[in-house]
Image (cartoon, rainbow, N blue to C red):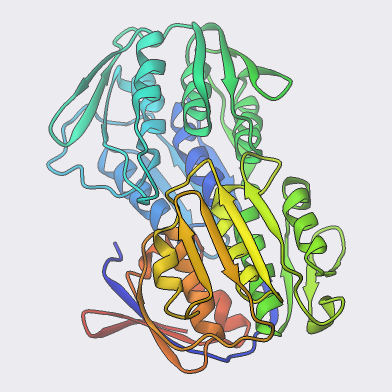
Length: 437
């Protein structure tokens, strides 16, 4: 797996061309885990095969005897999981956050699951107590061991009622997948139904699970003993879409962003329009040129991130970038993940004295037509890393970004897509060039 990568980026490259949004990271890796509960072959289309998070999950499933047929050109994967093994691995050092979603597949096939402790971005405490609550409520025994979590249910999971104390995407996904293999009705209250969760629900239905959603927080699931195979398409990534749109706006380039999931990002796009950005679009694509700025500048703004359908926290760094290029003071609040501010110190190296931050609040002091200065920075989290990449591409000079593999965790074929836009970056590992686009 890719670690300790450094990007060397020459600034002031103007992007021109087309870039296609990949399947959503926050949907694809969940669908891959859910595919393990099927009793037949599953094929996932529009799958972002090059994501670092996906690579770790591929390796874990292979290590446990699952079969994966990965077509990186067509971006499809086929999964067969009836031969999963009941073994203890020598090493559980897999760096992906959604390890808990693998439990249902192993419980169904072997009656026991041994999963790595969840890993991921350091944007605040992310416990797994709600997942333990789900497993125990459904009759499983949970034991936290050295290096892994062991979940045991020799006779399978039993249907139940789950009341989440807080709205949680991960908990909702975990409950949905587990309920799908519990023969009978499970009720989930205070669920968080995001577009990616809706994608998961649609997938589970194709395997034969009966799921009814009432409002935006109540779900009934009727699980089945035998789950059929499926051919299913991963939804486009709304976070990647907003990333390319913002980059196009700030770069002064001429780009078309293809396969934009408009239905899942209406409010984020409204905020762009209210900042004076009027882009061209049809049913699937967005075309961005300098003419998209209605009066030639980005208007300052104030917004708060939150739950869908609003601007989610993962989009926060890209609105911060917009604010840095706006004509005045903008303020961005993040109450859901208030500690998502670590990247701001690194971003400030590009934008001297233009950004201030504290827990839950970021203020930008925009300067119209500002050019970031070159900088040497360190990635702190996935989306923050991508914001640094964009700042470097906009800068006057050559910048260096350490740990850029964090951006590669969330952006499928990033270097290849930049190359399609006429933008070249150099990535090195331990003084050896490993990617050149």
